[in-house]
Structures are given as structure tokens and as C-alpha cells.
Image 1 (cartoon, rainbow, N blue to C red):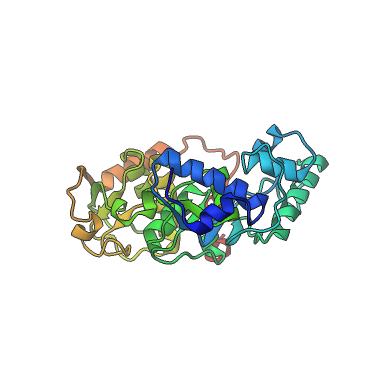
Image 2 (cartoon, rainbow, N blue to C red):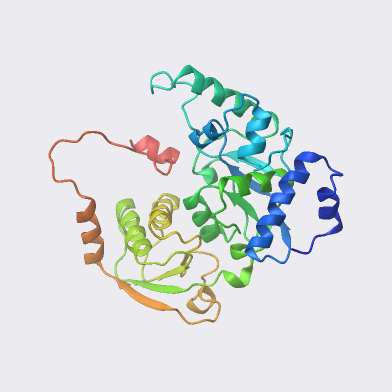
Length: 321
């Protein structure tokens, strides 16, 4: 059981209403499972919202019942009326405007609309994007936040030194409601040191090479490790780092990466590893990137379809298309 403040105990006693009580109880249980000694304040939350298909497991037409069961993991029905911190929506399950063109049924569209209205009335900003940092979601160094988006956690932890774990949908939602999350993992500064060193022997020249670099490193990195990149990597911009971190997140599962001389917690090698030695070291060569490109290269002349914007494009990328 984590040590709770008097204010947190008051919430668990129901003095701030049933919604916060149920949400905080989930977070306390989460903290106990993870061995967290206490909780910390959350200032921002990036949440799945709308009629995503997992919501179908609850067949009730009562939105409060759906949210209570599927987001708060509670059989007690409570009403979502407010969030305890700034909250922004992750990608939506359907296009709210062109839903008919995409083959979405009227029932799915209506259910999505009703759920989103409930969220927005409670204070959710309906950005509906997997790149929240392009829509005003900008946690500072040392700021604690929650997100349901793997690459977004990686980018914001790494590029700005913000603090989050790759929480699940329910944990992030409960944190947004009660304003707390367990103090464990990436929320603790001493846990944020690098584990694996990758010496990159080339300078990526474009977004695709950064994307492939992320894939190669992610595929060679054990889950929950923290890779550190060194070498002459030039001056990557947001688009390059977005592509690189997304590839690392989907292949390796790491929630934090350091690039020496680029990211704020890696001004030098010693700081990146917090004084510890690397568990393993590898060299990434141009040939590694070529092999990765060959792996994804198509062999047929015909192209069935092209998918763009995962993660969501920046306005500059949309312009270029």
C-alpha cells in the first residue's frame, strides 16, 4: 500500500465525490501492484476517447455505465463530470465527418458521438491525434503526465525530459480523473539512465533514414530498456525524431531514448547513463540501414494502396504531400 497524503485519503473517503474516489482507488491498486511507495501529481493526460471497438464489450446504452465499467474498471456506476487536469483526445475510432464514406454504420457513429460529447463536456480537448505535442500538449522537463500513445510517450520523455510510463487506457483515464499516478518507472529520475549504447556510424540524411534507424535500434533493444545513441547525427528536427522514436517504440517497446548532444538528459555520455556502464554496446552501420530498407521494399510493380500519416503528419508534411 503506498503512503497517501491526507488529501488523497480524503478523496478515498469519498469527500470529493464518487467519481474521484473510484478513479483514485484504481490508481492506489495500480501503485500497490507496481510497488510504488507514493503517488505523484499529473498535469496532463492524453486519452483514448469515443466508441473504440473494445467498448463493445459493455453492451449497455447507458454511457455512465459504459465509462464506469470500461474506463474506471468499476461495477459501481458513476458519472463523468470533470477531469482533474488538462486532457486531450488521442486518435478517434471513426471519422466524425466522413464516416459514411468509410463504411461506418449509423449506430457506431451515433455511439461515438454520444461518448465524445460526454468527454468534451467534462473538459476533454477533442484533438483526436496520436501526435498531441503538435496540438499544444507540451509537458516540460520533469513534468508528470499520462498518455496512451506509445511513440508519444517516447518522444515527450526523450525530447523534453518529461515523465510518463506507457500506461494502459484505463490507468491513464483514472489518472486524468483523479490527477494522480503511481510514482514508479520513468517518474523517478534515477530510473531514467541509459542501458544500451548504440554507436551510429553514419549521419541520417532524410526522414526515411531516421525511420529506418529507429527500426534497427528498436529491433535490437530488449523491452523496457533505454537505448543511448551516439555519433555524428546532425541536427534532427521534430519530423525526423518523430519518425525515429515511433519506429523504436513499435519494435522495441522502450519508453525513453537518449541521443547524446540532442536530448536534454544526454548532454554527455556519463549523464546519459547516470554514471553507470552500458549493459551492451552495438555499432549501427550504413549497411544495417540498407538491409532494413530491403526488408520493407516491395517487389511488385503494382501498388494496392498508400497509407500516409502514422504517426499523424505535421502541417509541413501535409503541405509536402
